[in-house]
Image 1 (cartoon, rainbow, N blue to C red):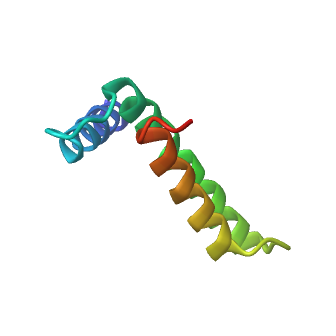
Image 2 (image 1 turned 60 degrees about the horizontal axis):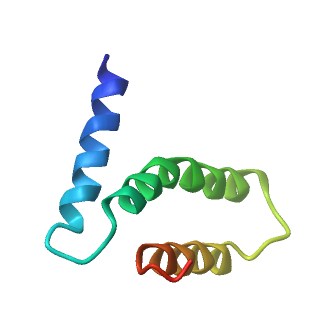
Length: 73
């Protein structure tokens, strides 16, 4: 039950972060749904070791989210 409440609070926090801006609420919900998993993946890569540049990966993820929320994707 506690984990389920986190999902609702997280989704609500993401919606509130973009309240009043011209951002599609469906896209905000989609981004809110994948951010936790994407961040766990980056942390896992850091802990397990990787050939990738994790700073570049974070920038790429951020740029992709901005483009998607801006309606450019």
